[in-house]
Image (cartoon, rainbow over all chains, first blue to last red; front, side, top):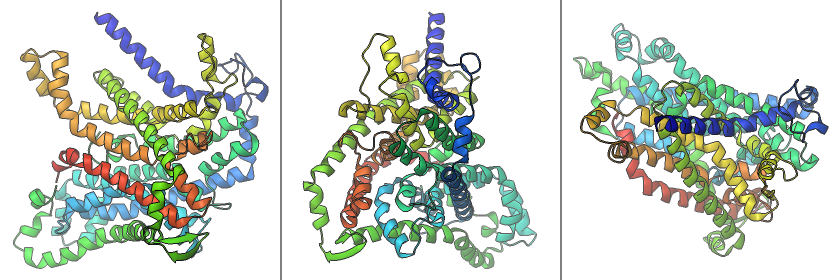
Length: 276
Length: 311
């Protein structure tokens, strides 16, 4: 009975692992197979087929893709940095000061409630406003918007991080005559560095993956990777080998970032309800 | 979640002998900290929200504002066949994805929560789909669902089945979109439930064992009630996300065939930026907001407890 239970558990685990990992492997396989080998049931490079880096080379040499990758990098770093700066200040304020009317709890809930708003309702106002300010098809517009949408994550992750730091050091700095701002900059920030780095990285991953506003507000020069991908199949038909390369090029960055910040992901995803 | 234990979080010196002079200074400092983020959200969320409300009251086409129509754009909602169709598609999508994701994710977490050894590896692997760019996932799925000799149909045929017209049949196209969402988001339910389970106090289970409780009784009378607020939170987050779905249907099916997978957000996007009917699109956005707020208000009271302990 015990053995049967363990075997069943093992089988379920293996099946789940297979289902999660297969699509990634399939993309990888297609990206290194020659077009004529796409539909052959060969699974192991070198043993069953001769892999090629041709598709990677040709995609990475495409000007549109290089430009889109660069845009994605600028947007993610810009948005994450902005969200981190705003979020760090707000989080420290919420963690260390007492607010009345609205209370700390109400303020936190207010920040978190931004996560609930359906993004598509902002397509019209943002499109009209960005047009008004001449920011359509600009990287800046996407930096601003992604900073806005990742700010709640930054606030919640960091206010918990600050709350977990010992107060004594800050109090000592204050007793020594430092101002709140000084103790924040020279005592708190260095201590919170791991949390700050993780938050930055998570905000980057979310900004990188953002699609709706990237599609709505860009037309040429500010197009990031997700929008490149969405347009490809309709202009050239499904070319498995290029799908493989593009999909991996796009996915790898946020996945690696998320794995780096593993420890903080759960509290970010649950809006701080679970420490993880 | 408010003022009950607030004293513990303000710095100790405020209540000390020098409280009076430093307090006035503190009052300014705290607004320096929280001010920028508040102003930012007012500028980039609250203001656009009111701008959308304002736009929805006008006929606003091709970037030009025409006459005031009052609730005209909202009465159009009720009679718009395409909008109702997109609402139906979205409801099927939400029902299909959220149900399966919750059941599957929680079941997997319960099964694997005792395997302490592999926890970090499991978490790492569950992170992969979660952070894979959704558009890229949808695009990749086109090749997986490929009807002629794609891997999924090949597998079905190897077991003697008939290949499924994944992306050309209205019913199967919706199933295809739902399955991709399940692939991407079940790990979310799994990951959080697992973290919740591993945070449960083990003393309770020790006590239950002493009292001779079985595995099912443990689950029914300990695990489930303890985990309930967290499960409600997961359900809330999944519902909110599922109602706004956009990326996967756009990249996988572009809403087709016909309108079979044209979800609400896609229809609103098209109204705004394909037909440039901004006023009407704004009204659609507000309706979606109302729907989501309704769901939140139904569930919110059940998850309050999660945030109370630390405030």
